[in-house]
Image 1 (cartoon, rainbow, N blue to C red):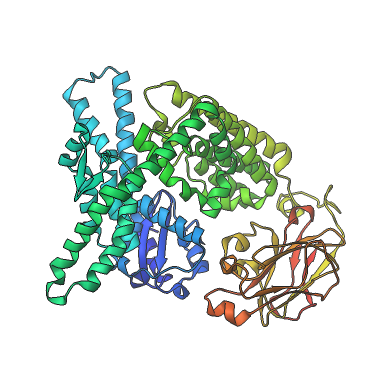
Image 2 (cartoon, rainbow, N blue to C red):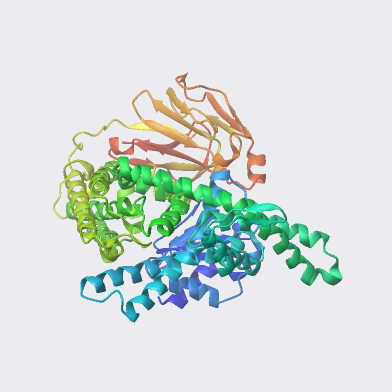
Length: 616
C-alpha cells in the first residue's frame, strides 16, 4: 500500500478531512484531534495494512505508522481542507490538556531543530577532517545551523498560535519584536530602557522558549477582547492594532522577563544535576522511558529540552537515557524471538527488535515487551544500567531525533568520546537486557510451546498455578472480548487477560470470595484478590479517571473481606455517558503470568454472578 492509499484508508475511518481539527506528526506517529470523536473507529484503523497501532493518549489520537509517517501526513493534507481553527475545547484532566498543548506546540518545530543540530554535527566532522573554521563555507553553514535555534521563538509563536487559536501571523510578529535588531542593540548597550515610564528588562530572547509561549497565551485573550470592542466598520485594522499595542509592551515589560526567569531556573536545575549527580537523570530516563511513552508523559520534558538546546547547544535530560531504552527494547525483542517456538511470534519479535535498534520502538513495545511484565522489567533494568553509564560519562545529545543506531550522529560533538560513550552505554543496556530476558524475563507458556513441531504438552507448566478458578461477572450486561475495548492497554492485554462487560446498569458486585486490595482515589477502579490468589482489576469505563470520582459511590474499603455478589461500587451510567465517556467494564487478571491460561466465555448477555471467564 503506497502513501496515498494509506492516507485515504485512514481518512475513511476518521470521518474524513472535514472532521480533523489538528494534524501533526512526530518521528513515527500521526497525531490528530477531531470535531466529532464518535466518527473515529480505532479498531478499523489498527487493521489497516501499514498501521502499526493506534490509541488515544494525552487528549490526542495517535496512529503509529513508522518512518514513512511524514509522507502519510502530507497525503492526508492533500486530500482535503483541514480546519485547524475549528478545534473544540477538550474535556479531560488538566495534565492531559497540558501534555496535548506541549505536543502540539513543540512537535511541528522538531524537524527544524533536528536539521540545525545535524548540520552542526556535520560541521564537527568536517573540522575533524581538516576544514578550516575561518573558511567561508564553514561560516555560512554555521549561521545556517544557528538560524534554527536563534529564530526558535518565531517558530514556536506560529505553532503556539495554531494550537491556542489566535492569529498565527500576529504571533509571529510578536516573536519578531523580541528578536528585532534594534532591541538587540539596546540589550547589547545595557543602558536602562523605559516604555511609558515602565522599565523594560534587557533580555536576549534569541533561542528562548518560555517567553514567546507566554506571549501567545496572553494574545489569545487580548485578541478576543479587541475583537469584541472593535466596531465592525474598522475591525479589520483596529483589532490587530489593539492586539499588538497591548501584547507587545506587556511582553517586553512583564511576561518576557518572567519567561526568561523560568528558563534560567530550568537551566540552573539542569546545571546542578549535571554537576553533582549527572548519572541520576539518564539512569531514571533509561529505566522509565517505556512508561513515560505509554502515558504520554515524555511530552512534559519538551520545554526543558528546548531550553537546554538553546542555552547550551545540547541536552543531557532525555537523549542519553532514551537511546539506551530504545536499544534495550530491541534487545528484549530479539531475545524473545530466539527463545519463542511460535513461528509467527518469532518473526514478529525479530522484526520489532531490529526496528527498535534503529530507534522505532512501537512495534517492540506494543507487540512484545509490554505483553510480558518480566520482559518489561528486564528492559527497564537494562535501561537503568546503560543510562547510569551514559550519565557518569557525561553523554549529551546535540539535537532532536529518534535515538537509535541509525541516529548516532546526533551524539557527535566537539568531544569525540561523546558518541563512543553513547555506543558503550548501548552495549551495556543491550547485554544486560538480553541476559535478563533470556534467564528471567521470558518463559514460554503451553500455548506458545504447542506451536512448535513435535512438542508434547506437559500436564502442568512448572512454577505455574493449575487450579481452575471461575470468575463471575461483576455486573449485568453484555460480555465482549477485550480486543473490542476502545483502549490499547486492554485491547492488547497489556494490563493482563480477561474479558469486558457492556453494563446494563450501574452496580458492581464481587465476582468471587476474597479481599478488597485497593480502591482507587477516583473510585473508577477496584483491585481484588480471591481466596485462591487470583488478582483482579475491575475498571469502570474508559478515561473515567478524568471524572475525579464524580458519579461513583464506593461501598467497600481497602482490606475488606467480601463474598460473591456483595455490592462494591455503584455508578451513574447515564450521567457518565452523557459526559462523553464509555462505560464498558474490563475485568482483568493482573497476575495473568501466574497461570496457564485465561479462557473467556462466549460473548453475549450475562447477569451479575454468572460465569465470565475461567482461570487455569
